[in-house]
Amino acid sequence: MTLAPAAQRAQAPSATSRRRPHRSPSRRKLAPYVFVFPFIALFLAFGVYPMLFTLQLSFTDWRGSGSAQWVGWGNYTYLLTNPAFWSSLGNSAVMWLLIVPVQIVVALLVAVLLDNAKTRMRGFYRVAFLVPFVTPLVAVAQIWVVVFDQQYGAVNSVLNALGLPDVGWLTTSMWAKPTLALLFLWKTTGFIVIILLSGLQSIDPTVYEASSIDGASRFRQLRSMTLPLVRRTLMFAVVLQTLAIFQMFAEPYVVTDGGPYGSTTTAGLYLYDHITRADLGTGAANSFLLVIVVMVLSLGFVRLLRSED
Picture 1 (cartoon, rainbow, N blue to C red):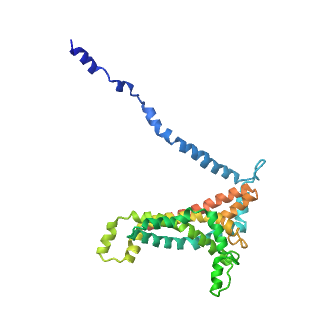
Picture 2 (picture 1 turned 60 degrees about the vertical axis):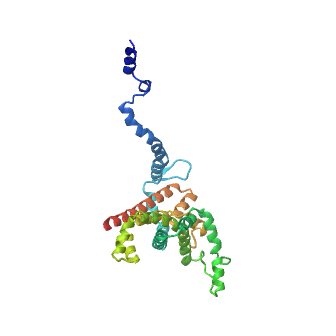
Picture 3 (picture 1 turned 45 degrees about the horizontal axis):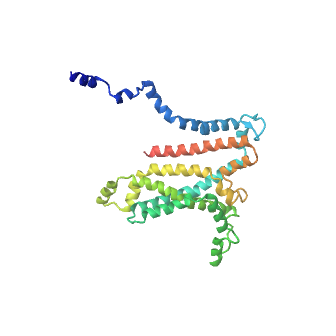
């Protein structure tokens, strides 16, 4: 008499098992897409749609109001036959030559020193190198205008104290590009140092220990081991800075306004000129030509990396 209720309780399903929901296989397959849907929706709304709209706009003549007039390849033909467009690309290419080789060498040397430093201040130095990168660009550009002013700037004051003549750092075509390149170097080199430092710290320390046992010097380790092992990180930094330089706008806009005589009108600043004139169709075509130029350069760097591998 006393065993029957106990047997019934043992055979009866528990309350937890009765409350457990049953998920169908279709719901389990649908769950990942539900989680990624917000990203896909935002990417389509703010990434794909603006790009497709800009592509369509590049084949029209539109001033921001009214209906757009279809002009076909007219905007692209105008830009490709316009000397000002090629001059802006040439200015950006010169800026690349002034910035990227120097920055990569300096950033790599600083990253190697920070990686090998046996000091408690190593974290402080990392933060100090990153401070210029997070400083507002417009504020830094205004400081550059004051420091390199031909009449009242601090740099020319030092030159005068040494008995040297004034230099038109921002008013001559010969010195305007190096001055802007120096601004870009000062602001972004710390960020490249952090990127390269992360690549250096991913190298197995036993590799250097084995080479030290074999008698390899520090320079030999840097040339034969460090450079090959961080080659991918170096290439990533080069591609990243190539994108930044060909999109450079705020530096020449605030410091020189594209002058003197258009010598600092970069590709990004030339694109902005179309917007100020409400020539949105030509501006859209200009942006897509820049995308093609940067894509070709980036693919060239990637191809170079693969050939070395």
